[in-house]
Image (cartoon, rainbow, N blue to C red; front, side):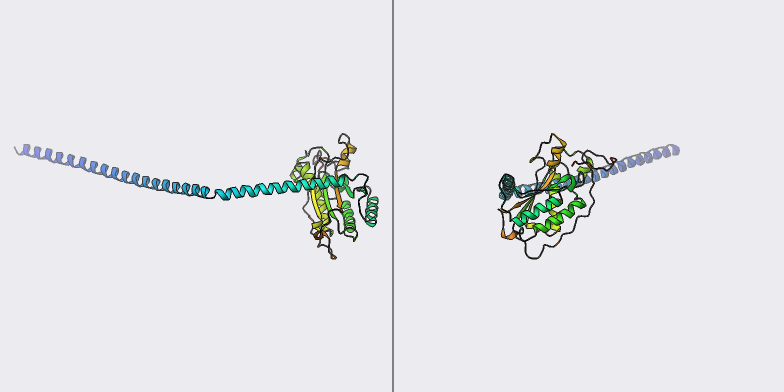
Length: 302
């Protein structure tokens, strides 16, 4: 009897122990679910806050765009006005150039002492310079003025430009404005070293060469306010591009003396202009169609 009693007591204790373990596991599971739901709720609240912030930011941007409509219109109008002004300046430049170059058979009203000085200058530098007295144009031949495929002036060209500047700064010439214009032949720029130096095409090359001449003139004392600089690429040929001789003539930088466009602010003062520092950065001196391995020899090309 006693043994049977002990058996039932053991079963009862085992049942109590078993039921107690199941309840603890359920409690722990419920606690984990609660924590997960709380974390999810916090994440949802965070996402909601970000969405509200983004909505408010977009609304502010939209309001700003709507409120600044007039400013945008004013900006577009201002840009259009700038484009129109640039076009007007380009048209005026073309008109003045065409007017200067159309004086065929008409003697430009340069003082005899100035015309004679320019003629002597051209004779003394005949391999480098031509002087057209009927138009008042000094032409620098690009094949001897620049290194091949470059806008860097040769030493001979710098020396000639220094002498030229002396003439331009003489009392007979200081009242005249100058137009420095670069030209090329119609052969496209092809060599990668030429492009890498910044001369991406004939427009760039012609403009850069004109700038080099203009800067050298200023370095040697010519007042910058007297000059305007332009590049016409191959658009103003003076000879046929069908021959190498014609191409060589088309490669040039012209300095037009404009006696009809004098402005008081352009007249040089008695003291010379301060000399500007020369650009010393080296530039690749490649012919358009040459390679780095090509022997350096006289190749009269761009």
